[in-house]
Image (cartoon, rainbow, N blue to C red; front, side, top):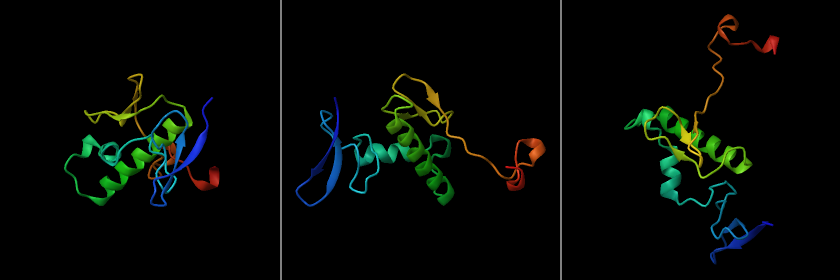
Length: 121
């Protein structure tokens, strides 16, 4: 049986660790990292479909996609660790090699084209 314990790194920084995993699965702010190093987290936030872009929207979108992917991994709905799809055709591959793409609702579409209005929700 695994359980969560809290670990102090000696500098007063505390992270959650799943017993037996050996690596902190959460950062000091309580965000799930899956035990990844900062360079791995940076890699998860870089969308190959927007390579080289310094536009704030592309950077924010990549960070959002990383957060969504890690949250789904943490929930156990997909088997981790997830990795970025280097082709940019999907966001991530799970541990089974299944490709996953992060999608969100686009409110710019008219109801006849798949959108909706708040009055009809």
